[in-house]
Amino acid sequence: MLLRFAVENHLSICERQELSFAASSLKDQSDGLIACEAVDSGAVVPAVVIYGANASGKTNFVNALSTMKMLVLWSQTKGEPGGGVPRHEYLLDPRFSEKPSCFEIDFILDGIRYHYGFEATDEAFTSEWLYEIPKAHRRKLYEREAQDFEFGRWLKGQNHNIARLTRSNSLFLSAAAQNGHEQLFRIYKYFQDIAFSGSISVPGVEASSRVKGDGLDDRVIEFLKSINTGVIGYQKTETELSEDFRAKHRELKAVLERISGGTIELKPDDEEKMVQIELAHRGRGGEVVHFDLDLESAGTRRLLIILSQTFNAIDEGLPVFIDELDASLHTYASEAVLRLFCSSKVNKRGAQLIATTHDTNLMKSHVLRRDQLWFADKNNEGATEIYPLTDIRTRKGDNVELGYLQGRYGAVPSDDPVAALLESC
Figure 1 (cartoon, rainbow, N blue to C red):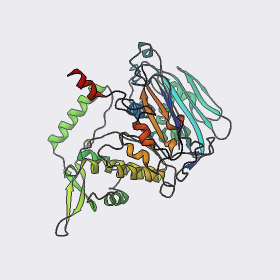
Figure 2 (tube, rainbow, N blue to C red):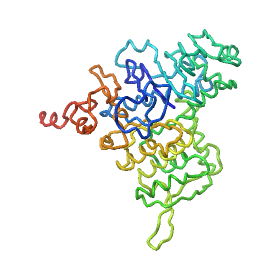
Figure 3 (spheres, helix red, strand yellow):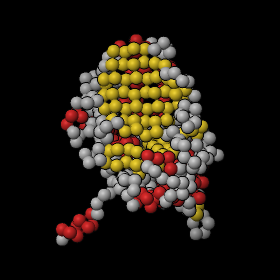
Figure 4 (cartoon, one colour):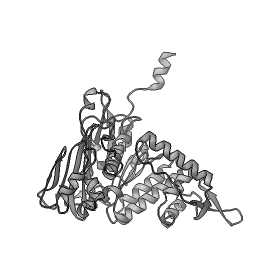
């Protein structure tokens, strides 16, 4: 269960910005709230939707947690000795090139609250910390300042040996997981399980490759049926890959790895066959016709990925991040995805959704409470600021969509580009 996430000095984010999942004291509908003793209100929200103008920094905020996950998973195994830390600092103020970027997260795992974070410059991780908070008191598992490590008595395992293996440009958590640290591997796996969906345009081959397991979840097909896509089923097909295809694939992978300086995973790799998904439709005569995914709509292909991640998250109680939820999707389809998370009957294990969107129709949905609406806006210095609707005085029953479009809450384009063009004519 995700409680909060904070980031500083990353892309368009300059000063510290924090998003909290703690439910407020608002008297909005409470169905769907997730009970949580670790926050003052006793509950967290199952979904957060972030609004903002184009280039306001919504995607950058989502990217910040994606970057944190990447560094946790790969800094030890894919980082090069002396190769520095891949980060993207705030560029509109030269002072921030020398300042560290900071990432912090609070979450609950197996009933225990954890607080984890780190700071990094271009060259190295300058600090890293992990605490567990089983009740009222915080217990140190470890703290790190550059290459100096301090371990609390609650952290068991080969801590000092692993510390000696931890490079300046790798995280101790990453090194611990790679060296069989049983206690910290649980924390590592939490990051591993966080799902992201950022592709707006999804080719058929990518949609097929992103579907996990033996095939599509039956609930995905039922969802597609319910929104009148015409889909009634699916089948898997296997296509033999030619040696010429695999050779070109290896060449492309080598080029990308030279450019990136790290390991790139491309699918299919050296597999003999490519597995593809074809969706079934009902023909005029009642017969079943299967379509290659490239013949399906962009929205259908994207839903295959989003829904597969969603149902996996609901089954396991995991967080999912979706950038541009409304891209290629009708309002009703986007709202239906939100309803999956915001229904206590469906979402029994506390899965959570963090989505960015431009679809203001969702603001009118009875699914969302006011404390589930957040905004991204840029200040006069071009820096992103993240804030919730609850920071602004509203009343239950207010037309939040109208208020947003009228600019009462910020996070909308401030000028009229058409008027400016007309004035220049």
